[in-house]
Length: 555
Image (cartoon, rainbow, N blue to C red; front, side, top):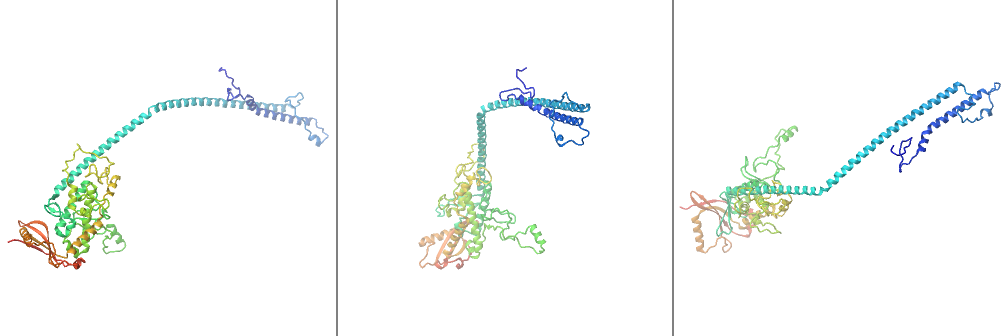
């Protein structure tokens, strides 16, 4: 015995929260048997009344009176009264009914007891499950408290390890990028040396230093009127080749795409900035247009067109030639369209060189950059100077790439500080020209646009020819005769390039280049003859210019 009182009906122990309700339980248990017992008593009384009516009925009377029919006889409260005069059959029937009800009550009682036992067992299992869950929750709570004790330290340790690994990865990345930058500088310098890019000091010259590539002088775009067509084409071709090679080494995509000579494409050309890198095969300028694609031919054949369709070049990009076959003054007079196209090509080439200089942290020309006006026009047209400063400049020759002693720079730095040349590119994620730092760098270039540059270049060159109004004569004069001519003019006190009285008889001599022919040095010169007058500067069509080459050789 556990010392607790249990209800004999519901088998529930009493507690303060759940007091005993034995009276209610007993009443609920006895409610149905009492109802059945009441029904049996009512049935017994009805049968008794019927039996009494049958035994006391007057045989002479056919029907009972209305009052006797509805006379209420109260039922007997005793199931077995001494005056019970039921027949044995009736008693047996009543007994069988009572026994069946007793058996049904016993069966229901057994069922209720079985359900109670089942509920008691399930209650025991539920209590055991609750106890197990409480124990598991307590264990988890203890484990959680134990884990919380060192959580902050472990989190800080993990963050420190992650930051250390990130710094190490960034350092290795910067180290690899620095090695790549060193390799780029080395390759560009070697390419410039192999191409023969040099600066030639000119003593006493008004034009400053000259720059040569492959033994050919690089023309300044502002003085192309004084250069031959061969010199212009050769120097521009060499500059284009070296510029493309340097841009590939630097992994930089130039704003204006340059097409170098290849199969069925003998001379270099350049595209405008808008039409560059369109991945469309473009024919060589002056060559027949490309044939239409196979799909276009099939489409035209399906529509019943048997003739050859016209070339599909309406929206095809138009390359600008980086070469010229006639001197510029004659080209300006004979073919204005070709002259304009060539001016655009030279302006685009100069823009590419200046843009590449700015992208590598090198100022074009003299480096005098105004925040309001940007790079001056004179600095952008100096192709040789810009290319020399970009690839060679005043820097020491770069050493072969080596991992020892390579400076590093953080990937988030901007501007031209740090590594400088070779740092920014389009081919690496580190210091990318399309990234945040690269976009800020490009926005600060302040370069003169190719269109404005071409317009000004064409205007200045035409004004030089139109304003002079001279006929051009190309000739080769031996150096001795040229020096003698200069001495004679000095003795006469004459001054070449000045107007005589009356504004007539003007003769200007401009030396171009020294060449060797048949073992003798000759000086190629260009002489302008004519009369300077206001009417001669109206338009190029008013010029009467003729080109003739004269080789003046000594006996």
